[in-house]
Length: 312
Image: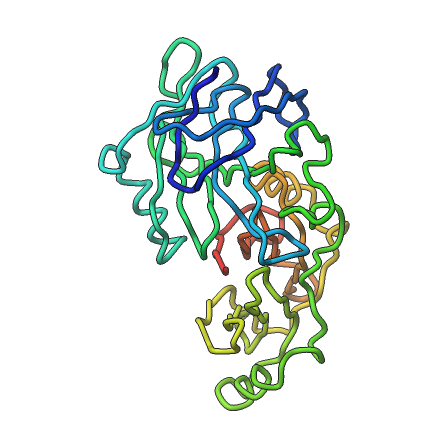
């Protein structure tokens, strides 16, 4: 029997997916799989096909359910993951997590090793807003990407999702976008009282029932509220002295699409805005969801990455 590492998310019994062959990573993992059922051991690791057990996330159609998920592309094919203490990680990793995932909980870290045992980088698993997030860093601790997650039954599915699963949004338009007119009156009243100059641009209801509202007042903001409509935080994004223009996914520069596909594989596009100076676009802000976490990613007018903000 193959041995698996318990990452402290599993409770009792988990369907373990053993991948029969390695594959090329192209956004969504394409593999063949066989499935067995086994009790989690106290020291276990799924090494096949670069996958590590990540934990559980909410289903997209039933938020009371939790689905097991795996992180994909953790280490080079034929290599392995070697557990490492947080204190032994490069300091740049801790700095990055503190700056981008405020309030995170560290869960597990690994050295990503090549088949010859050479250090390829690090994989760090954290909990953020109750969901697992896997991040890949290079050997110096520089951020590389947010690791894609797949449910066990999707490990051999070219689409990378199934209807009703935790990543069902990958099948099309995000299901959490709501009309501004449908926002609870408590939220709209909060803006009226506290940010009267804001123009509301976009709103989403998150899987945990919380809300994220995008607005502008010479600066773009993301304001979050709990499922019980209590204010959580307000994230300052990009300066926008002129009214922003909505941008469809198809009209984003190819450089932006390439960056998002590489850095957030399996991401779901939510919406995007641009601003212009004398008729020339000088910046984009793209809102995406990647594995149950929302991000606002900033780019300059040519599509070069500028900054990222973790929203919820």
